[in-house]
Amino acid sequence: MRIYLSLTILVFFLTSCTKKNEETPKIPEKPRLEVKKEIPKPDTGLYSKYYLSGTKSLSDLSDQIGKSGMFIVFKINRRDLKHLKEGETIIIPNRGDSEMTYSPYPQHVTKLDSVKKVLFVSRRVQAFAAYDSGKLVRWGPTSTGKKATPTPAKLFYTNWKSLDTHSTVDEAWELKWYFNLDNLEGISLHEYDLPGYPASHSCIRLLSEDAEWIYYWADQWKLSGDRKTVAENGTPVVIFGDYAYGKTASWKKLAADPRATDIPEEELDSAIVKYLPQKKVQLSGQ
Image 1: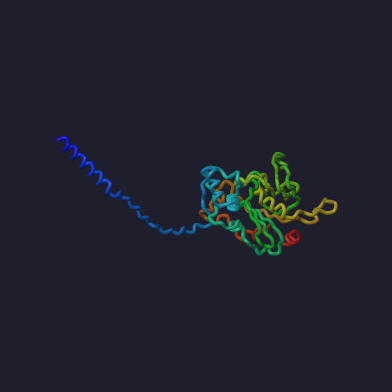
Image 2 (image 1 turned 135 degrees about the vertical axis):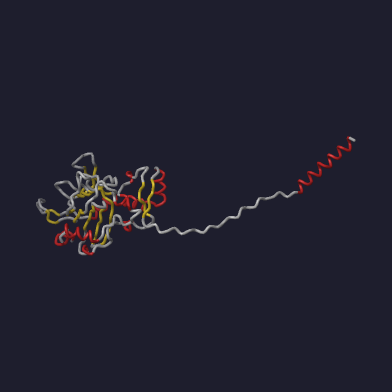
């Protein structure tokens, strides 16, 4: 009886093992992937908003758009690198166009065709423009005088220049790429902080790259033999427009309105007629 039970158990065990070995393991089928068609992105214009969540987000932006793209970011936000702060939203370019595409100034001004060189500074949109024979050759952001010490709206000329000097208001303020506009008042063009709003003591602050460019592009005055009178003016500089202190800056609206900072040719024409008599332009611009 015991032998019979043992044989029965053995047969059952062998039969079970054989069945298990004969079964082909099932390989799960790969899920069928659905191919989605790319939906074309709508044309969103020149600008977008970008939130600076921290240092990494700024670094990621720089990696994405490169050095030239970041230079445009500085220009359209009227700031330098150290004034791009965590926790705020800035405006960035949507496309990889040249910086001239984002200029608030017209690319050509007919009234300036006969003028070799002239600089404009708009207090309204906080930006300068350099024209050569009517053609826009450079533009950039500025920080003009704050409300208590505004930069005067008038015609100046580039007088004398210095690679590096110090402010007469505070000796601790180092001013690089300095170009004097008013020898008595000390009003000048130079490199200094750009916080995104008018903050100077009546001078015109510029990005370092722009200040250096103007330093070598604009002409100095020419003095008489006794060095007491001006024999020939330097490059004319027209300061015009009115900044809306206490209101939202126009460049912060660019994502919604890409023309928010535009300076129509008519506005420039008006400044030319008011501040730049033709005979003066011809004398100083040749």
